Length: 336
Image 1 (cartoon, rainbow, N blue to C red):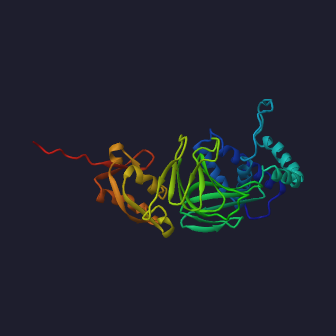
Image 2 (cartoon, helix red, strand yellow):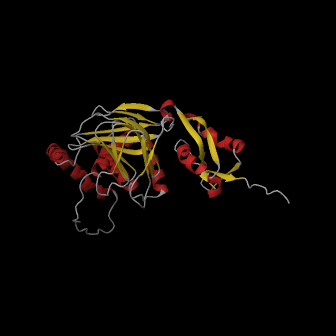
Image 3 (tube, rainbow, N blue to C red):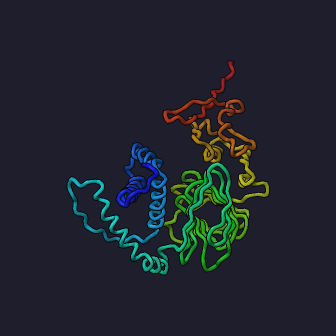
């Protein structure tokens, strides 16, 4: 596509394609070939990426709309052309544009739709942002989150990474952080949320929070007081609560450091892997018991992988996906 002005038909085609890719990438049967095709389409023109991001924001907000149990009947249509299937979507978008002010007002009053939506991301450096309610957030490397302001709550979705929150106090407008399957509920406080895959750790610095390991469970969760920590992962019915101490180093990332205090590799790898382009894998449980300590620069952790065989009784191999695999060196038994 050239830099010359695009026609209305070309713009409609881009909008249709953005809607198509948004649905396909969220489908459970989306293939790797389709994802590669999407990336080629997205990178072909700046307008492609712009339209996709706009469609993605609509998709994210729509996920919070209430579901109904009524499913409309679907009439199958044979040999339908791919592009024509998006014409009803385009027509619906035109109708929605006319009805949007009334729909937005109604959705806000019912607590279905936010009146503000923000997306923040930190890639190769930490970042400090101010949310729409005035709350301050520090984002660690590789962190992505969204903020939505609803009538009855302020909502953050931590998509990946780690963030430190200073939440503006508003007892009538609670602040909810969704991380993996759980949530953290506060009114005004300071706390840190770390997430890697389905593992989540919450450290409370000031105030109090309620932590739930599953958003579908009744109640608001377990209460944390300052110097307490909650952990949960997929399948946990309730979070695991523990005490932290004055020498706790879990927030060292705010100074650009990762501190490993003589941890077993099985515990250290989730902390290391979220900074790596290709995560480290343990060959077996025995390798996971080997312990590692030290202070590392979070921007230089890729270089740590090659040095591990020099400081630990391990050697490196690669699996079929190219991930580095740590293998323990068998200990020789002394001859009798």
